[in-house]
Image 1 (cartoon, rainbow, N blue to C red):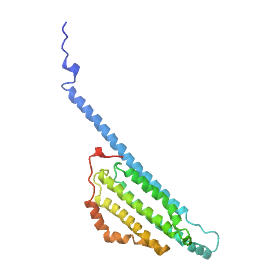
Image 2 (image 1 turned 180 degrees about the vertical axis):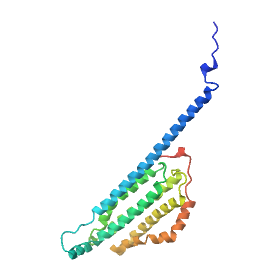
Image 3 (image 1 turned 30 degrees about the horizontal axis):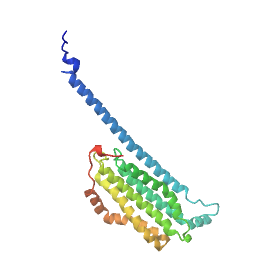
Image 4 (image 1 turned 180 degrees about the horizontal axis):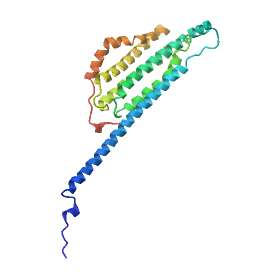
Length: 253
């Protein structure tokens, strides 16, 4: 008996069935794409929240390290606090430094839609230096009579220089791997990167100045000066040398 010919519908979808299958495949692919976008955005958001929490803890630890005067008259308390003025000055300097780092981090990471490149690694190293700042602040305010001021000052300044450099590398990878959301304000991002590089440069230059004595840290107060004089020029340079984004498939974690 001859085999009966199969109808076209028995072997493959035809007619109205084919568009239905294609539509289902496209819908599934779109659902997968949206899920991946949601997961990637959630990962970037979690990193931002985690970084904010670590910075908040570091600032809190700074305050906990402040010396508290014991009982005494008002004059005695004021005299006791004056004798420890370096510890209070160092607190305000470190608070300003952490605050400046956080403002740059906030200005950039609120526009990040996903992670990629080496951003996660750079960010963890950046946070490591941030949580070390209370220790480095306490180390900086140790007695200047021990002959190790240059080492203590140098470690503090070097940590801040590395921190600024790490942040600039984070921003560079964000541009390189297309990690920003559409409509990102390029001038604001370039400005945050510029401030980090300026701070890194001033802290690095201040290390040899520590040879002049314990008041050398006052050079850090001059950070706004190069920002005003060279900030616009550096920001324009960063804008013209911004890395181009590859296709999403080249992104690496």
